[in-house]
Image (cartoon, rainbow, N blue to C red; front, side):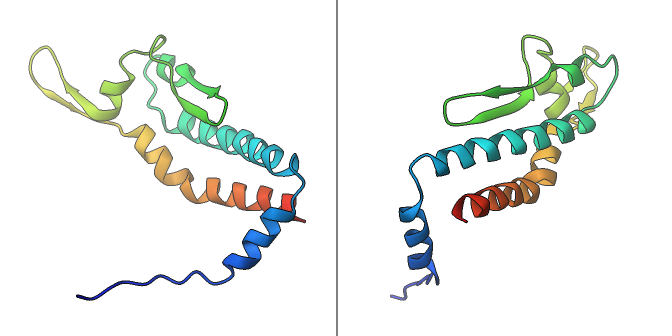
Length: 126
């Protein structure tokens, strides 16, 4: 039976950096990263949202939790957002394809969000 081995170089140095941080510095950096990343994703999602009346676009909100930030359409404002995203059948039975604005946003912003956190954490480690 063969095995797969993954070696992560520099992990000891990273652990040392994190262990020497002041206790308040890292959580503050993470919150700052969340704020910047959420604003970035929010802007891109609003630009990607299809516009008919503008209600869907204006329903996109940022909601901060204790450990995360959610960005997306508010279902109490635009309950139809899921059908716009994934597609739906009309009353006559024809198919309306999905717009995939949420999925497109996730794909387009993944690298940018990673870069934001990388920069924020690098500043915290200095």
